[in-house]
Length: 201
Image 1: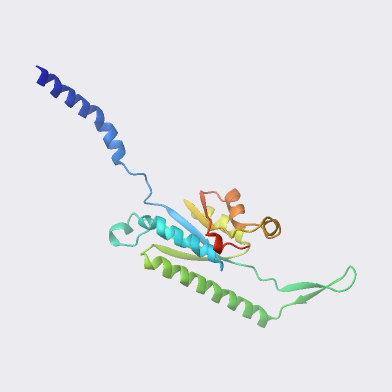
Image 2 (image 1 turned 60 degrees about the vertical axis):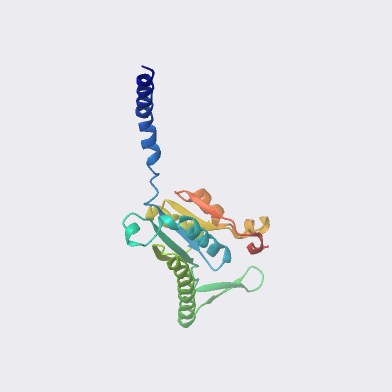
């Protein structure tokens, strides 16, 4: 009799725990994440990229087994727009506009393209070393605005940017890409703070 009651209690306990076990066995839906990392010439931006590679590589693998369900990492670099003229003071209340020649414009654009290519090549090497599914994107304009526009159009799940550690004065005059994106990006944003020795003083 006691054995029958114990057996019944165990069966009842097992039945009651089945839904809980099933719920715990279902992993969170993290296999379709689309991430964007914004890079520039700073070490802090590449530190942020390496941080993503180290912590999210299992979601972004290029192996055949994982490729069908893995996410995509997009590395974005924004080139500053080139102004064809510059204004210089020319006495009280006056200014002189100096226009760039077509040769100068072509030279500057070529230099920008080479810089972008070098930065993205470095980023791709870092990602391929860990078999990360990666694509690159080059934009032109104000970095803060272009990054926010891009993540909205791409329906990004996570934006990652580095922090340069600007002081209050520099932040007031130069602005902060990470601060702007934190307030204007239409997706979750992760700001990766580099070690103290890497931060701008």
